[in-house]
Length: 197
Image (cartoon, rainbow, N blue to C red; front, side):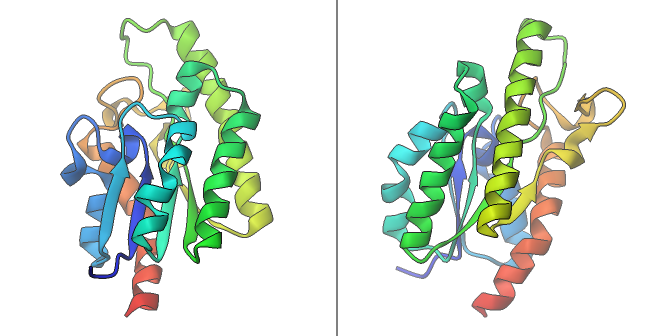
């Protein structure tokens, strides 16, 4: 089996919902940089479910690097920040024990699109996601991990929510949104690429 440069571990935001993996930020950034990347995003998954399949979907395949992004479905389900942090920390530990570099990704903001999901529920989710992101930043800082911020570039500072043109619904990026995410990843992917050549 040819060596794998990078695996993207995550939920629908890594998979590329609703367009599919070909439109995902991972595919776009890998195509631009020439990295061999595998998409292991599964729609609807929590960080606990990602942890449960991490050995099979990441460690077994021996990539050089793994990106880890989760939390949106955890916020939907109302999981405490400590549980989400523990799951991400455990995935990082599994990667490091296997000699795989772990990169933490901050999930994008939510977007108020006027859907049938109550704004009050979305506000509660957004607050939980803010706590998850802060925990991820601290984890990256203390363990000196690289961090990809997919939150700030998709945010409308005037509203504190995701930019409407970057989203198809309350949580999932549009084609333009995934392109913005790819642009965030490309500089780091280029550095990874220079190390693999």
